[in-house]
Every structure is written in C-alpha cells, then in structure tokens.
Image (cartoon, rainbow, N blue to C red):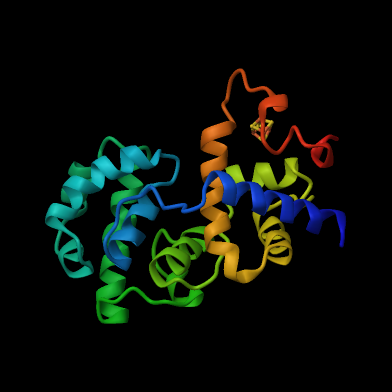
Length: 209
Ligand code: SF4
C-alpha cells in the first residue's frame, strides 16, 4: 500500500470516528434550493446563507418563481451576503436558464450544471453529491489546504487535488468524505491558537513532516 493510501485509510477511520453521520450545513429541500444555497455560499458562512435563504425561499423556492423576480427583489433578500449584487444577477439568470433550457428541472449531469450562470465545477459537484447522491468530490479552499497538509496531494490547483483525492478514497465514500473534511476543519483547524499535538490527525506519527 502506498504511503498516501495508508494515510487516506487512517484519515477515513478518524473521520468516521468523529463524524459518523456527517450532514450538510446548508439548509435546502430540493435540488433547486440546494443549487441556490451553494451559489450564495461563495465567500460566506453557511449560517449567513441559511439566514438569507430563509427569506428568499419564502418568495422563490422554484426556478419559475425565481425567474419571475427582478434582480432587485432577489438582492433585497440576500443583501447581507458578500458579493450580493453579483449573486442576485447569477440567480436571476440561472433561474431563467433552468426554465428555458431544462423545463424548470435542475439537471443531474456536470455538463448541463456547469452551463448555468454562476455554477462552476465545485458547485456542480456539491449538487451532484447532495441533491442526486451521485459520487463527487467538491474541493474548496479548506479541503485543498488539508489534502496538501496531510500529504494526500501535492497538486497546485483544485482540479489536481480533486483527482488525487478521488484516487485515494473509494467512490462510494466521496460524498461522505467531502462533508467530513469540512466538518473536521471547522472543529479542529482554528485560525488562531491551534496546537498540532492536540489534532487527531496531525499528532499521529504518519503525519509528522
Ligand atoms: S487542527 Fe491544526 S494541526 Fe490539525 S489539520 Fe488543522 S491546522 Fe493542522
């Protein structure tokens, strides 16, 4: 077994011990509400997004209703979020594309998802995994940092890190591992005052550099 595979197995075991039933923290109740929440989550905490979508979904929880709103109406619900103006524009265009090109359904394939306004590969991956249960491994900045710190990848971009993680973890685990990476970072990787000797992973001999 390679060094990286061994590390991935150890990480998987620790993740399952600390986060046996990981759940997404964005609130959604359909593929469209998930897609909307993920688009809004760029550079924002999930808590802030949930507070904005609590208002937004009262008036627009389907592509048809969102497409019927002006960008200004959308902006009024999400103005507290970073990049709110751009996000309102993306959501308005995205909803119109869904109605016009996909009969109001969120597509369940990467090509069509990534054709939507404001939707990149990471957002599409989250929707594939969490809305449709199709194995995907969205890599955000936190997962990128942890994967490199733990020696699972030396990729210099998220595409390469995603490829490496997909090699190391079985596809049946990808959706769970993605949320566990994020949960681990939130619980243990504090910006200030963290102690590697108290970290359940960095304290292990296999992870000492
Ligand atoms: S908890 Fe600290 S030591 Fe462990 S991975 Fe996060 S930053 Fe590194």
